Image 1 (cartoon, rainbow, N blue to C red):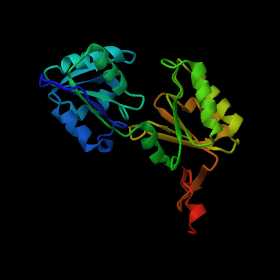
Image 2: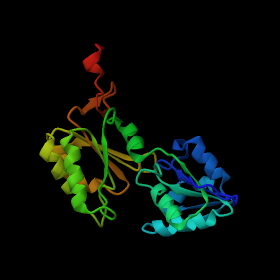
Image 3: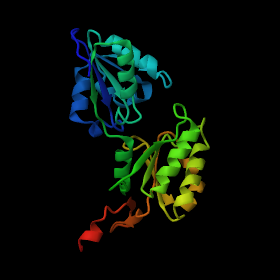
Length: 259
């Protein structure tokens, strides 16, 4: 990170799913140290108990470059925390802040504070769908051409490992999920487990478990607050002793040990 001589500092804080109990002690400490907290309004609201007595700068979606520049300016002579949902380095704000700092020649000290990314928090609500290798993909084509996303999806599903879809469906992109599922069906059987977690660890959390061949009937359930899991060749649905369903991708212990 950049050296500094101004006494200022910028923390880029991954807030995980937004529940304070799911944030790391380091993230909570960084927020506590900050004089000013900046971020998208949605994520600021999730950490509202940590904002008392601080200057709060709200920014809207689509203003990420402006937000990064403003945060670096504010941090020249004070301690600033920028909040980023999940992990700031996974589809979050860390890269753009570091790019802007590099291009502007900023000498502000920057620390990226990790958080629990959505794939991990939502996976815990399903059981253990990501026990081995897996792929994460974003279906947002705001920064990546859709043709490139389709190419990457095809390669990912060819590997027959679980694929986690971020930003799966929005009002502006209602058909990207349909296209992704169509690509999955080229390489995976209709019985492949599919799981969706909406608002993981937040108010209004919902869960859906279905199969790839039946997923079309549930597209309306999916929105931008959802994470979609499409299983791999060994992924299966399991039930506990109470009959509750979940998703597991065995890591391979059954091939090595008798249990």
